[in-house]
Image 1 (cartoon, rainbow, N blue to C red):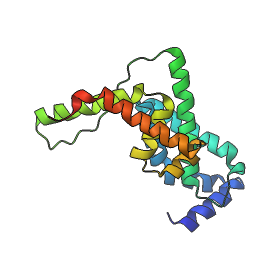
Image 2 (image 1 turned 30 degrees about the vertical axis):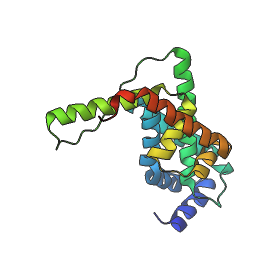
Image 3 (image 1 turned 45 degrees about the vertical axis):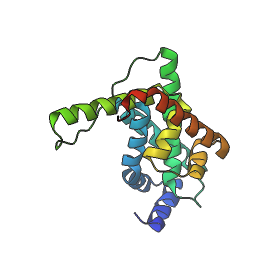
Image 4 (image 1 turned 180 degrees about the vertical axis):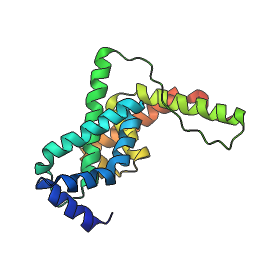
Length: 182
């Protein structure tokens, strides 16, 4: 979708046009879902979080600054929804999460098993990071946001975002030492 088309949809959605908002959902649903899935690690919970994010966006679209594209704003809402869910989950206690892994059918079974285990371990360790570290990894490495975009999405100072990302990477590297290639 082109920026002028998206800007037009955002303006119409801000005025309460449900069809325009539905078009924005269709345009950004996959990205918002991917943010939620990577942060939460569970498909069903990510689907719920995606829906919650769009409900929040609809309720607060009147406050959206129409000078900016809605994509980063929608991702920010998704991150906040996920952080809320992670905090509630942590309060209930941290049970080990299992993440669905998409497997490339081409590799040999032994290679695939090794890849699956590696991916499972990385996801497991990601899920054990503090929520703000997990958000930093998600936005930088999975969503490709710049540091400035991350700071905006998280509503935090740029220096804090950089520190969180550095600490998250260091912590992950320490926890995944056994996965290094010989």
